[in-house]
Length: 127
Image 1 (tube, rainbow, N blue to C red):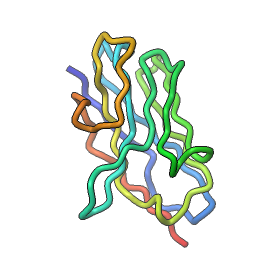
Image 2: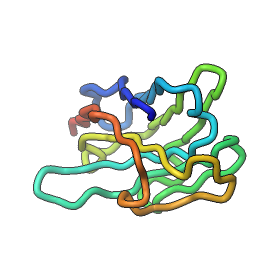
Image 3: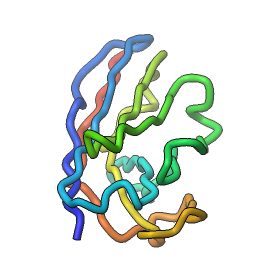
Image 4: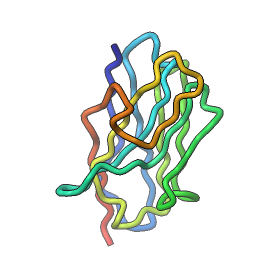
């Protein structure tokens, strides 16, 4: 069992930056791949970025490549999403998710493949 808690969201002007954190409770967190998703009210949840269990491999949605960076610190049971050059269209609730327990190969851009989710953190980018 893993509990995930996101933090770091807020209101920022276009061009600004935020760093989201996904803190996990659970001793096996380092064996999970982790992803960030976003959701806009009335729309489907969208993949943003993922990172494998070791932090050695990452993947990004085209819309955030070059602006967002996902990383993890397994000693701190935390995954980060550094968000730079923010745009108004980045406004959404951001969720972290963990999946692929014990698998070194698990990677997925589909939310349904992940087992655990945080409660979300709101990011609002003003123009």
